[in-house]
Length: 402
Image (tube, rainbow, N blue to C red; front, side):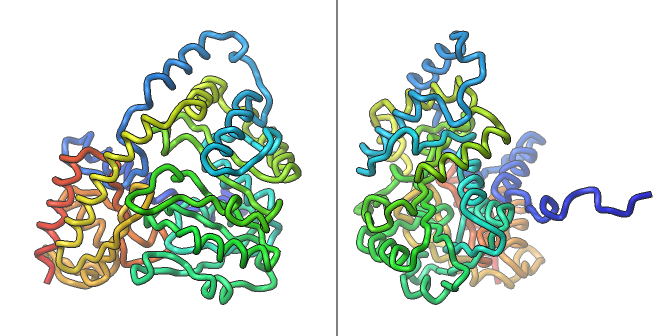
């Protein structure tokens, strides 16, 4: 009888998505009749705009979309994505430089799989989104964390990046606005980091999925546009999920040099073939339309952001910097870890999150999932009344900590 492991070491090393796990547990508890309020999922609570849905309905009735289409994406969608990129960030690309993927996650994986050889290092600013480490690991790369905290608004400096760089460093992962912190780099900071990367011949993989969700005086700055010195060493990741409330439609894209896009397309041709044609036509309607629906959602997120940050900062032991983008708050709860609460003494933010779910019926994602223990991530992409109720429950419970 074989003694070999049933599951490969490569796949066994992958962790479950912590954000999806928290959301699944919260939904299961709600299905069992418990009034759980979930701050875990990173998805807008709005429906996809009607004009996008109608485009999908029309596409479903067209026989040509019942067949295989090019693995790299429908030509009309690739052209529209190129035009949208020029419109929104001033970055000029050809349709041949666009690969349409099954959501942003596939774009993330294919970018790293295409760029990395075993042992190549990737600089990743922590806190980081949970999928980045697994994609880098699957590609054979080595993640090098550049840890930030609330004292700098979770922003990394050129000095920190330089201290982490080695001869093996090949890629800088640059994310602004950030998931999970909502941090947004200013134009000056973006230019400084981009010029540093260009000076050292690094690739920059930049995730711009939250480009339209910035608040107050913050502005989105595309690093490829702001730092032309990077030349053809930039790969841009994006998608329709967050901007157009289309998380379930699974359409993302990768933009890069022609050789990178061709190689990534070859990979996709064997992994999944084309993205669903119906979803691609919905995405075409989204990126070709105006941004009025996005503006309405952004206004709601901004209102909720201000409410959440104010309420969190009123809780003793909680410190929450003001997020400038995306739809997450990332408060520090380090002062509460180790304190007694309802007869228990949680030793980590992960244990504290479990206690909160059981006692207050509120789901949050602990900082361990994002590489920085001692924090929580709370999404404010949920209804105003649920947000207030959820944070109120959190405040009531945490006020008992001694």
